Image (cartoon, rainbow, N blue to C red; front, side, top):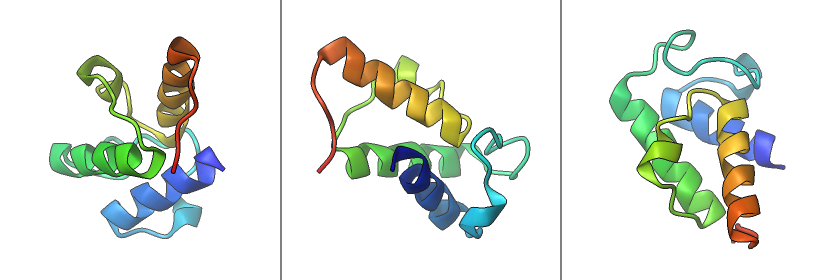
Length: 84
């Protein structure tokens, strides 16, 4: 669920098909995303999962896999779930 949703968000922001984005694909280095697109991906992840990511956590997101790790660490540290 998380992986596919984040992949859809990234594909939408970057104008790509979801099939082109593997879990470990680096948004900037491999897909050519700029810092504004990366910011938009983070913002859409926050909206989709109803969370507010601390800056230091948001800066760790460079791939779908990174985003899932950040979301899960946030969930584990707060003891609460996320999502709408």
